[in-house]
Length: 367
Image 1 (cartoon, helix red, strand yellow):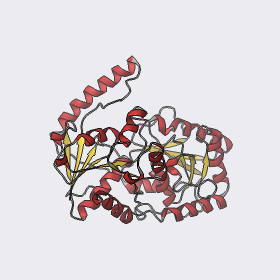
Image 2 (image 1 turned 90 degrees about the vertical axis):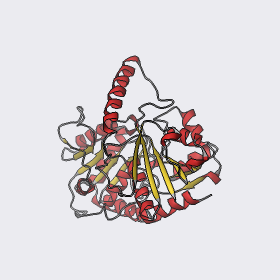
Image 3 (image 1 turned 135 degrees about the vertical axis):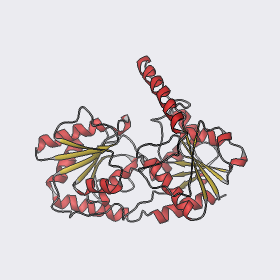
Image 4 (image 1 turned 90 degrees about the horizontal axis):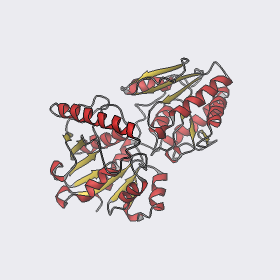
C-alpha cells in the first residue's frame, strides 16, 4: 500500500507521539509498504486560543521567527536525529496540509485533531481516511472542535482503554473505533542495574505544557525531600533547566539517545508522573521496564498498566501531598517497591511492537 501520515509539525526534539508514528512507519516500510510522512510548517490552526494581548504579541513574534526558520530549513534535507527512521520512508515537509501538498495514496492517516479536519476534506484520490488518536487533545483546541473531529465518519484507532471509553462517551459508533495498544521495546528499555540496592532517587520527565503539571511534581519532590533529606531526584527533558528547580535536584537536558534515558531510569528507584492527562503515558512504562516503580496521578493514561496498590501507587489529581507520601512510602519500603514494580513489569509484557504493528496494519487494511 501507499500510506501517508499527516503530521501537525516537524519535531526537532524527541516527542512520544511522533515516536510512535515513526515506529509504525518503520515497520510498515519494512513490510514493503510505501510510507510518506507529511509534516507541515503551519504554525497556526483552527481554534488555537489566542490568550491575553501580551501573549498574542509573543505568539506572533514566535510565529514570524518560526516561519522564517522553517522556510530556511525547508531547503535542506529533513533529518530526525532523536529516532531512527527507515531510509525507505519518504519524509515530506510542506507549507500547509491542503490536498495539493499531500501525495495520492491508498490510505491517509490523520495524527492530530486539526489534521483530521484536513484529512476529512481530502478527495478520494488521497486514499481511505483514517484517524490515529493518541490523546484527547482539548489542551490544543476547544473541546467542541476536538469532539467534532472524533465524530467524523472516519475509522479511528485509539491507543488506550480510556480513549476507547471517551469515544463511547462522545457517541462515536463502536464500528468506527479500534483499540490498537502501544508497542513496547523490551530490549531497548531493560534492567541493567540491580533492583536492590538502588539509590533513594526519583526520576521525572520535565515539560512546560500546563497539563503535564511538572511544577506540581516539583512541589511533591520538595515535600518528599522534607520528609527525608536523603531523597534525591533527577529531571530530564528537552527544555532548559527550569529556574524554580531546587539546587538539590539534578537536571539532564535532551538525553535523546535511548541508552542515555535508560541509564537515567536504571539509576533511580521511583518514577513520578504528575500529569493531568495523557493518552498512554510512555515514560512511566519505560522507567518500570528499567526497574523503577511508578507513582502517578490517577489518570486514564496510566491505568492500562498502573493499578493503585497492585502495580503502582496513585494519588488524586490535586493531591500534591499524596504524591509526595507515595514517593516516600516506596523509598522507605523496598519490599513494597519491588513487589509493585515486578507486578507492573509483568503487565507490560503483553505490549510488544510486533503485536502492535500487526494490529495497526490490519486497521489500515480494514474496509
